[in-house]
Image (tube, rainbow, N blue to C red):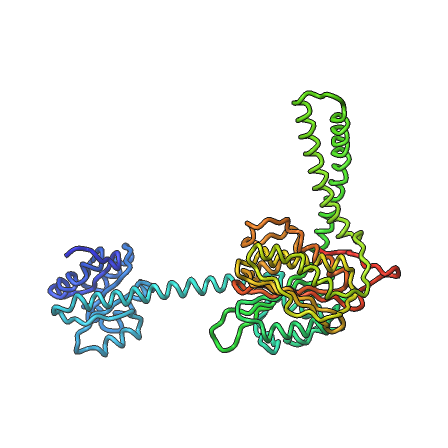
Length: 500
């Protein structure tokens, strides 16, 4: 019989009756690579001390041990090796007792035509149990490693119920709650007085925790009063759970150090670009002077044009960096005034109508209150809406829809841009407003990664907020709030101060 189904590499057989041993070895031959036989427990101890076996098969009646005693003695020498005991059909009770003593399985000595199939079944079952135990051990190890990583993370992570009750959390989340003065285990108990627009923030958090669809994510930022850099990124996601009770995961990250680090990077970038702009300007001007001289030969003229073009392109790139720097430093000044925002929305939607049509995307105004007034910088508001509409059109497939709405909210106006595009994962939504952020799924679409960063700048300067709700394959919703009382100075200006 061929070794066509080796379930085990090497087995040790404990059987003192020669006839039985021969029949058992024949039954095992197709499923075990090598079978070594001994006739007593003493010989078995010696073999197990020298050889490597992944299976032990033992009769319960040995010359020097019987029943449970034999099983216990083998287990002392080979604790983890699978042990199958052999018993007669009239002594099944002994097999059950042996299983309780530590045996892995049993085979009845019924040497008829079906004995080989019985052996196959027992060994296959045993191998399945081993595989399940290995997978369970690996899953347990991976779970423990993940739990340790989560616990040691500086970010706060919690599983909460729809009522805001924290079921599980790491020490980072405990520190987050304690830093806000929360003494309970409920995220809805955050003191709104210590947070900017705390009442509205808590209301929106409650709505998302209660209503977010499975697979969806909502991100926002918590800013503390009296601390210019006291801020947290917050993400709420609804896990894809088939059970009746949805699992809500709440993630927070302290971004104070990131703000400080980014500010330093911006200062270095500003100094570098200022230093480069002068020499490049001199190169450009010199080329223009030389190009104005009469009758340069064709090769010289082409080289001068190439130098001039390259220098101007570099200057343009530097100007973009410096513009971003001015925005971040607060040199980008806006003047919010009472404006008919519904008219601005209509104008922007009309201006993008042809682009949307060309791409096969429907662009619609789903809800726009007529005569709606908002206190916004008209150009800044238009730039925010234009950027969101542009993104919606770019990332929505043919046949999809981008819908714009604006209405009166509590203490301001609420602008919404909803698309039926590809959506995004929670991890992508968390870095959406970072400078130069480019999502992996959007890598083939042209863009600098600065658009949403600038949107965030303008909205924050107005004292507003921008929230994102998204789910893979279900599109994205941007909700932008512009308050009726933006933080204007005595000249009626708002400044972009820090948008890291």
